[in-house]
Length: 67
Image 1 (cartoon, rainbow, N blue to C red):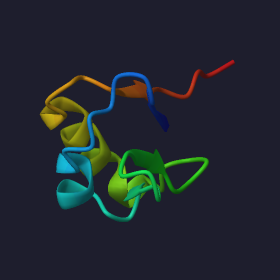
Image 2: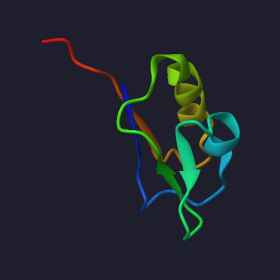
Image 3: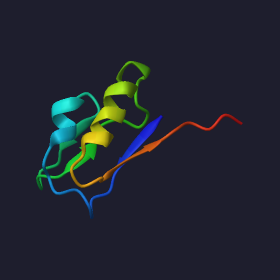
Image 4: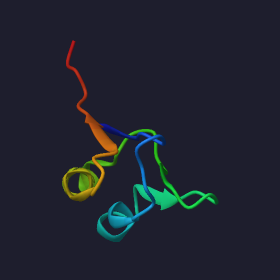
């Protein structure tokens, strides 16, 4: 699973950081960025929760596709 933050939508509330600091951090400009390429399995639930709690809906969850 991967997550993505849309920089054009993120307003820097940092709700994601409060829920899952292992995956998200604040960039020097005050907006959220993703710290990892792939979300470790033990943080997938927290990353999904962070996406659902984002006030602006800036976080997308990209599920791994099985081919």
